[in-house]
Image (cartoon, rainbow over all chains, first blue to last red; front, side, top):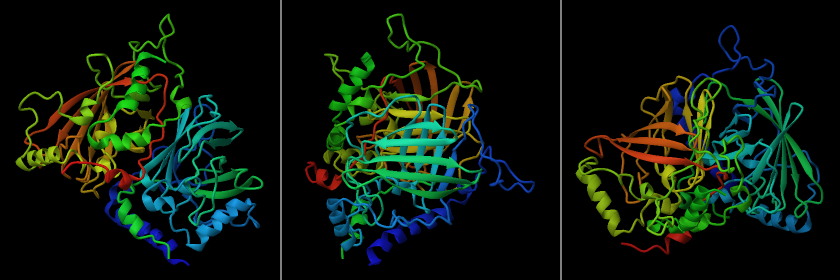
Length: 260
Length: 277
């Protein structure tokens, strides 16, 4: 079963390793503004940095932490029974039967959310400004915009791959609501499905300089009988940077991920 | 909706240069609601229209604030209808004779693309358009400026560039990438962005001005006033051109719209319908 799942992952790793070797200078640029210990190393246990407007500053390069127990191949781990609707169960079983072959990324399409933020080998950068937070995804070099300028989600938007997001602060938690997804993306790499009714809520809670908890709530009445949540641990990657990872050869990618 | 955005919406519906039309068709169903989102904090005239001639805003550290949604406005035809984005078709559209002198292989390359009607253009295969093509397609781009980092979000390529202002230098002998490695500095009120480390797979424009991995792009970005960003883009590639050359590209602030998602999909299906040698 592992073959077609593992192969693209290995390909990705190969890209990342290759890039890492060649990009040492760019990868080791010190991040400005990080509190440091006496020996110059980042003080990852220091208190949450705050913006001039008093909210936690989430800015930085992040990835899912080494001690996080979730997996890109199974988002719902630890959940017990997945509350799938029958039609979604059927679709999920069909995808499981071919080990997740046919996933959008085979054709250089976005993995979708939350998957695009779960790859440890491809971190993301949060750039937080007062009216707009941007999430730059190393995965396929795509981006998310989270406006915090007071606009509201639109009622019936043209569906998109990464949806339409708005953000607000609830105390020290940054709460991002996203709607307007198409139904083409998968929640994980084995094909846990969602429909275009998906409403994704993300709660970003920075714990200190080095750590952040991120809770994803999947609310999709067409695919699930009730909303469900997973909380993942994220770690700051200080003094390094995103690299460019363009998915640039769709034909090549698709010939290497065939159903068995 | 102001005049600029009227035209913009029209141009998005009509941008069909070369064989790029297949890609554009994919992008047509834009999400109408968020494309009409009036910017806050825009200086306005007595009649309520944005005052695009007001002074450029500044950040708390005194620098010009380039942040905003910008677009390179397509030229208009005799009837005032939006035409094709000319810098997208030919980055050297305004060049005087002798300003852009291609080496023989580069000239041959451009001539070849005339016979193929642009069928071989990398973007026809959904490959990244790179720099400067991501600016010039007539789709908006967004600049997000912070003191250490400027981020460019391109609707056309659905990808981003990071421009570092934290004092780092360009990497030596980097792994070539599609959008290069960018660092910037301020020269008075002009943000000077230097980019190197490109691969040689992108074209500078639709007609196929090529470049090599030796390409170094210098962008001089100056927000002339509230509504106008002057972009001076210099192409320096001694392996493709006899000397550096520069395009002056004016961008306008889009005051009531946003950068939308534009994912290039199903390219193989589009490509098979394209004509040309």
